[in-house]
Length: 191
Image 1: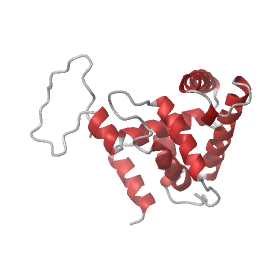
Image 2 (image 1 turned 120 degrees about the vertical axis):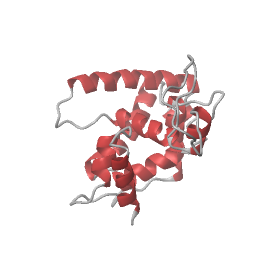
Image 3 (image 1 turned 90 degrees about the vertical axis):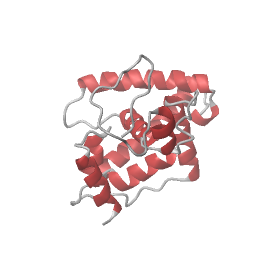
C-alpha cells in the first residue's frame, strides 16, 4: 500500500474529521490529477514555513510548531496530497506573505522581522482570510492562509510533541469511561 492510499484510508476511518479534510481527501485520492510533479521545497522554504507555524503555535510551557517540525510536514502534504491548483495557491501564498511583510515593514521579508511583527502581520492576514471566506463563492480558490493554518494545526496536533505534551495522551487506553470530569484549563484528549 502506498502512502496516499494509507492517508486516505486513515482520513476515511476518522470520518473525514481531519482539519482541512476537503484538501486531504481530495488531494490524496487517485484520479487524473498530477500531484507533486512540479513542487520542490528548499531548506529555506521549510525554515520559512517553520517560522510561520511557530507564529501560529508558539512555544509556551509546551513545545511550539517548530519543535514538531511542522514546516517539513507542510511541504510533504502540499507535495504529496494537494492537487496542482491548491499547490499553486499555497506556493503563491508563501510569496504573498513575504511581500506583505516587505510592504508593511519597509522591505524586510518575513524571516527578518521580529516575532511581534510576525504576529501582527499574521493577525491582519487572518482577518483578511476570514473576510475572504465569508464572501467566497464555491468555485473560488481557498485563501492561502487558511491552508497554512490548517496544515499547521494538523501537523502540530498529530506530531509527537503536540499529541503527548499539548494534549492529554494515553498510549494504551484502559476501560471506556463515558463521563470524565473536566476542569476549566484541562488539556483536550489526543486520539
